[in-house]
Every structure is written in C-alpha cells, then in structure tokens.
Length: 386
Image (cartoon, rainbow, N blue to C red; front, side, top):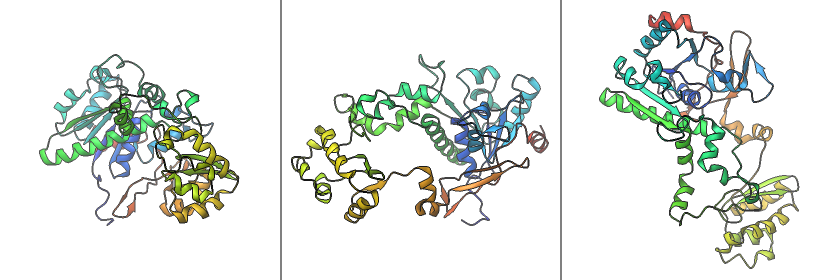
C-alpha cells in the first residue's frame, strides 16, 4: 500500500458510546481501517469492561480484555447526566461521521441522543446501534449478554457431543459477530453517504448476528421438514456432517480430519473394518458414530507426524490440532505477522493481535495502547471547540 494514501477510513471520526465487547469490537475494526475512534466514557470508572477480567492479570489498572479491544482509541470523559456535558457531546456529533451506541432500547431516546434527534444535528451522520434482541418483542428489555443470546439462538445445540446437552462457545461469539456485522453496515452506509450525502441508521443485535451465523444449517433445517440436527455421540465436530468429519486422538496429540471420501481414507489407514461403509455414502451419516470409532482406534496407534506423512500427500484434508503455544511457534502463523506491541506513557506495554485485513498488501500496525479514562478530553475539547 502506498503510505501517502493512508488507510481507507483515514480522516473519518467515529464517536463510540458503546461499552463491553460488541460495539467496541466494531469500532476496533474501523480503527484498524484508519478511522479515528473517540471513545465516550463515564468520568467515574469509564467502560465497564475495564473491570471485566478474563484472568487475574491487570495492566495499568485495567483488564487485558479492555486493552485488547480498545487499543489505539482516544477517551473523552462525558457525564451523560450532566446537561453541559451532554451539550458538549452533541457539538462533537455535529462534526462526526459515525456514532455508535449499544444502550438498552429506550435509553438513547431518554438521553436525547437517539437517531431522530441526532440526525437533526448532523444529517450526514451514520448512526449505528447494537442491542441484545432488536427493538420489538418480548425480549427487548432482557439483558443483551453474550451467553444469554447464545442460549436463545439455538447455537448451543450445534456444539459438543449428543449426550452433553447444550454447549456454549468458549468465546463471546455473539458480541464479536454483531460487531463485525455492524461494521459492514456502517461501511455500506458510508458508501451511500458518499453518493447521496445523507446519513443512515444501521442496526443489528446479538440475536440477529447469531441467527445469520447459522444461516447454512438453519436453511437445511427449514427445508428438511424442520428436523432438529442430531450431533454425533462420538467426537462430534459438526451437527450435520457425516463421518469421518471430526477430531481424533493420535499417540501424541489430536488430528482433525475434514470432508474426505471414506473409501480413500480406508485405504490409506489400511482399515478393512470400513469395508461395509466405504461405497455406501448414506451410511457415513447413519452409522457416523460407529465409523468414527473405527477410525479413532486406528489413529491413536501412530503419531500425528506419521499420519500427516501418509494423508497429506494423498490430498486428505487434515491438520494437527494446535494449542496457542504451538500456533505462535508455527511458521504458518509467523508468516502472517499478526502480533504487535502497543504502549502508553505510564509504562503500559501490551502484546496483542493486529488487524485481520491487509490493504494493498499491508497490514495496519498500531503503536498506541488503550487510553486512560478521559485521557484525551482536554485535547478533544480544544480541537473541536467544545
């Protein structure tokens, strides 16, 4: 990428009033694309995720999760209950390109910063909202939290083995998917603004993002008599896909095997036990557990490297299951150059990830750590005449 051109969103001002994960994840994506993100925080403690700990590690008085998701942003301390501070915020919005908020439905209107009010201040503004479950229906006032959204979405019945009951994702998948979806909508609205000169209201929710996440399997369900999927009872990796799709223990670790013709795999594994199934694809699902158990007994007799030496030259889709230490040590990960160190003047230094996007061959790099509460208040007020 020609550095003279900068990143695609350079020059855009994003005012981010959201907290926790979903909204800040969206503004992180916009920041990595060059936007300037001004994070609005309460003067007394700031974003609640500053105290949302994933471990007992604290850096510069804040949690690692706050640092991870707010690197490179600026912090403007605003008391939304103070009329003078609220007037300051509205003057800032007159100059902004994007406003993001993830208040519970009704809160923004009560504060006088809902879309209909803000668009009179700045008709070109792209106003972006994330909620838990939309703005209508019986769940509107329920807590819009990741685990609860997963529980209501049906997604938990796709994970784990059949006998385990519902299994949640080990990540805040609803938050991050909703943030990514909102970023897409914001970018589309900015393109339209470039054509028409008018702003838009972009909305999504944790539940809508999780429903979309399941579009492939939900479409199967909707058009297959609405039969609920049945997970494999043995080393399940996908509720719908047939054997041999799964993860198998080898003598020194775990081997993932994806979509593979069973006959070809049977020959390579030298498994005569698979003869009744190899040429009858219907049994790859109906006898899924039995087939996978046969494969598992064979895989555990050798090391992963021994199996990869046999399977990969034959174009079998397989991979060693890595933990994070193994991932970071791998040449494949090193080639992507996806880690960076961000710093702050109070001796804060954080190793974290970089943007997943490359623009004209270049991945954006950030050097600035997440801000202190109100760290940039004076400078922002002076710059924008607030």
